[in-house]
Image (cartoon, rainbow, N blue to C red; front, top):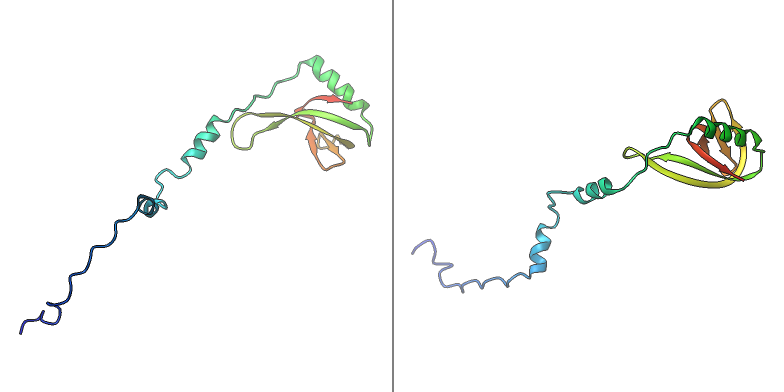
Length: 126
């Protein structure tokens, strides 16, 4: 008696069914060699603006507008907001009520909580 007598007459195992392409692809889905590559390309393609420096006359006009602001007055402020992820930023228009002018911190504080640095303000519209 040989060592294989107990299994020699068992039926031959059948072949497994062919896997669909969808299931085969799903096996490799967790492996992505370039994770984050698409996001990095999209971030690089995102356009930002450069901050524009005001002329001396522009600064004088802006200082006069700041001086004339009153507490509780509703204004629209156009200012430069730097981008947190790359060089440059965007010009933003914020409309709200003036809470105070903080000369110590050089900020315009709005009643809604926004604080805008004087150096970033481009225009104030009443």
